[in-house]
Length: 97
Image (cartoon, rainbow, N blue to C red):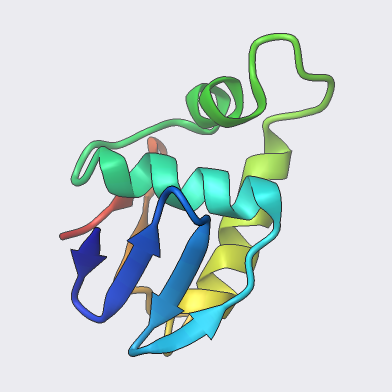
C-alpha cells in the first residue's frame, strides 16, 4: 500500500518513508496498518486499543496515544503537523489520504 511517499508492506511488516525504511515496533506497525487500511475513518482510543491489542489485552487505552506519537515521530516530516495520522479532537484519530 502506497500513500503520498509512505509505503506499507503488510506481509513483510516493513514501512518506507520516501524510499527510506523506518523501523516500527510490533504494535506501532499494527496501529499504522489498521489506520491505513481504514482511511478517513475516525477511531477512538478505546476502539483502536481493542482492534490492535485485542479484547483480552491488559492495559489502558492511553497506550494508544503513546504509540500514535511514536509512529508520528518515525513517519512524519513534522510530527507536530502530521500529514498521515491526524487527531480529531474529542473523537480520536484518522489516517488521511
